[in-house]
Image (tube, rainbow, N blue to C red; front, side):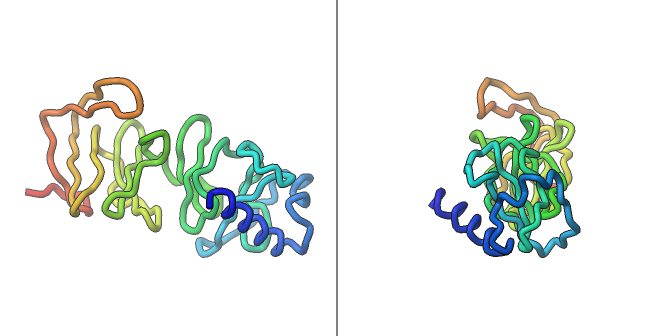
Length: 187
């Protein structure tokens, strides 16, 4: 399925581009167009190489919205509301115009898992939450530590330390409390 989806999407983009294929983008370094949030972006590969280093995103009209080489890695073959990509060793969410929305919290060598409809985001060392379907920020980054949501609540702390190395450091705090999906403290 991992190989089939990019091939199907590439074929769709090729069909939308009057049969010129992805080679039409070789000499168009940055043909950025106005796209609405309803547009869908499809991951395309330069010269059909399927190299992770040679991808970009084209809209439904076959126009390049995100040029080849702008991002180093992609976690999304299709972008409707948002997609997660790597830029300068940071995991970021972009919209269907290719614009950066926020930094995505790193977990298990990839973007944070969507739990209870939300995933963690970060800004300036603080953690917040975004909607897993639309990508919209639901709770702005404001917590030093924050665990995933479960049953409508998440455990967060304003002060904490990270202990241990690797991709799963322990979050330690004496000030944990619970919030609901609006960010309000649960009593």
